[in-house]
Structure formats: structure tokens, C-alpha cells
Image 1 (cartoon, helix red, strand yellow):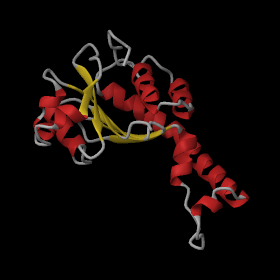
Image 2: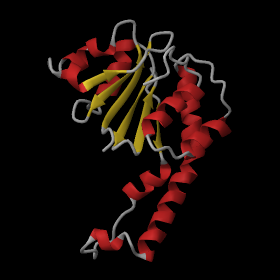
Image 3: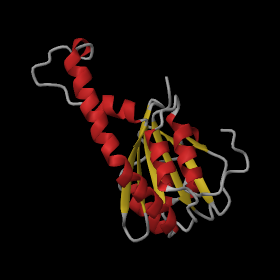
Image 4: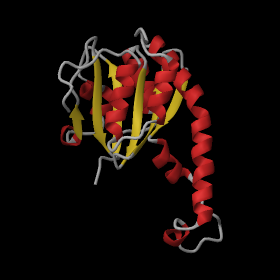
Length: 196
């Protein structure tokens, strides 16, 4: 069973665990949070167990830190929805592991009684193909949004949009690795200790 929860990426002079919005989660938070190795410039990633992060925390974190931030909502280490926000309120989103995202998002017909049987049908395969194509069509705009966000965060994006699109279309066993690779490619300085 993989990780389910949130990966929070932000810049702060103080540890993100000390941020008021996270401190309010209670004293048990330290046991449910894992700090990844910091990146130069105060960039930090927190891995938070499911149930700690709330959607309205992202704008509060950006306001508190005065810097762009993003969060990846991870499900079983197999799929993630990344949401980035900059200080002007501009937001972007992108799915990681598109095949898994498509399987998660495909809508089942109302007349399906047993989903476990439906997923073995040609109709499911076709619905999955259509959903994957929809997600794939969004990748160029998602990549552009990620690059604009990284620029607003103050990093010089060294990657070309085509490389970001390639990452957004990539499939990894652990989506956390894909999230980390995306941050690297967007130009954020790499952590001194890349081993997680």
C-alpha cells in the first residue's frame, strides 16, 4: 500500500511544520508529517498523511510565506493532482500519472450494478481511452501554467515546455518521485540529499 496524503512545497525561513495553519492540526502532527530534505533558498517539502491538509490552506500558506507554493494530493502513491498558487492568486493544476488519473476519473454508467465487472468490458476500455485523451489534451496548458508558476516563484525555469509536458505524461511507480522530478525540471534548486 502506497502513500495517501499531501506533498506541500513552499519557501519559508522557518520550518513549514511551524506554520500556524499546520500547528493548529495539533501536537500529534509530527508523527503524521515527514520533512523531505530542504532545497537551497528555503524551499521545503512536507509529506502529510491523509486528513491533515485542507484546500483553503494553500492560499493561507502563500499569504504567510509571501511566495508561490504548491500541493500534490496523492492517492496510494499512484496518482496525484498538483495545484500551484502564486502570490498574485494565479492557480494551475496538473495530474501526475495520467493513466492512473484517467482510471480514477472515468465515469461509470448509471446502469452499472457491479463496477468490478464493468472494468473488464470493452465499454470501460473505451471510456478509459476517451478520458486519457481528454487529460492528455490538457497537458500543454498544464505545463505552461507550471512554468509560469515557477517563474512567479522566482526560479529561472531551465526546462523547455516540451520537457515539462513529457514529465506530465510520464508514468512512475511512485508518483512522489514524479512530483520531485517536476520540481527539479521547473528549475527549483535540488536538495543536497536527494535520497528520500
